[in-house]
Length: 348
Image (cartoon, rainbow, N blue to C red; front, side, top):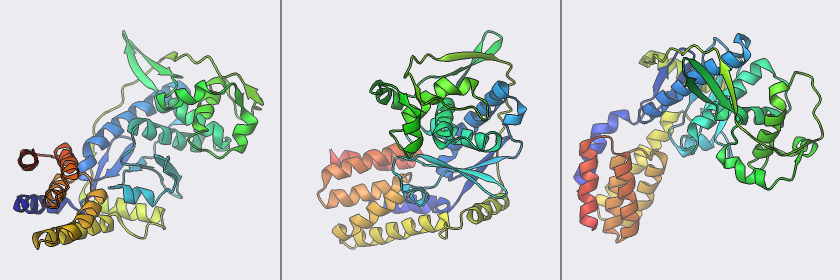
């Protein structure tokens, strides 16, 4: 069985350090080949959100300069940007270009991406907003819904994100002075969204904020708009363009002294050493290395397959079944699926 894992690894080896960049009219999404479909979905969402924001607020609210988005290859790469476990995305304004970095395992990927895009918009249009209010506005638009109504379009906003509803139910009222004093956390996003719901539609730069607000009611707002469907054409960047993008990214983040390829190379090294130990009968020593490799590159089905086999040989059948489920979930072709199915059958 192990030769199948090795063969699959060799077949896919050329993709280990590859990076992919895909461009739409106003955005560039830099990620890995395994996340290409997610990048395509993200670009479509961003183009539609950009067009909706322009229809709502005017051309001065959108930039013609492309926004760069980067999705790290693994959780370890993401954690180099933030130590806050609850944080799912960040917006970084640079000297020449702006970047959005997204946690690759965000549970609400499109909402997080939308939230960070609104940060980029507000950075240009209303740069001096209080942090709590800016975060609230970003949440307000994060789940914006665009839909066709007969021969017109309409925007639906003001729907409380599901992750905030329970917190809002426990709030008697909104104390904005206290909200302004507290650091932004998972506990302050809900009241920040609620404050934006009440204040944002009529807010003008320089307006004073009340000290307190009532908590509700919250009803979705439906706004007819003059909307032009954005161009959905997407193109892959050439290798040269991707290399230029990598240089730009590393210059933007001096703390990133380890390029993404280094993370993937480390995962590759751990996997090969784990496979060698497993082949020589040192399964117990191999498992931690294979686990580390899979954690760094969780989209590689053949690696999960190899880990499952090591678990099986070490009589860790529960862990072996869990690894096989991940191998099946990440299989990208019939060969990978067949290898995982074969091992799964031997476990039953």
